[in-house]
Length: 218
Image 1: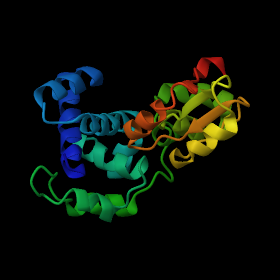
Image 2: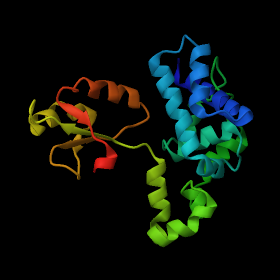
Image 3: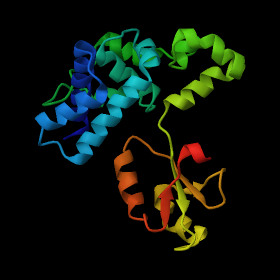
Image 4: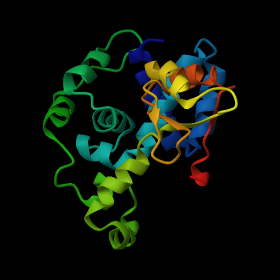
């Protein structure tokens, strides 16, 4: 599937989730069953789009000044994936399997609107009733903290020092952007982008030397 076709599938799935009130995981599973031609990479990419839209629902809708499934998907591309209007328009060219071209209103929103001035619950993508509690804990940093929690989590690994030294594994995984963690002298951290499956697959090849680090144990 092309990136544009994946985007169309994501819009279709968000419509299904909204209309049928089904859990996202179930909707994704049923879509995969009904679309056998989609490979594992396609399913992972579409899943990433869906979860990013759900995590950034309020801010994406604010950017587009519209709460439709299509608007939230397009808004998420700007908010979460830092894509500009031209890059998004290139995906929405109206071609085969691609979303319809951007309307003038959509392009204007993607070009001119931002989260500056948005209420804290919208900018941070959390329920309004939580605002007072988060303000007590984080104060003016509550939007930044909530945004960090709504973004894709990194992959933390613990080096098995019985198999290899940290320095050796760090060098061997440099192509994945691996860096030392701030939490452990034998830990590595890989920031996961939109194509998280590829990164996880490559990291899995080091399973004899590394183990996933449970965040609860930090």
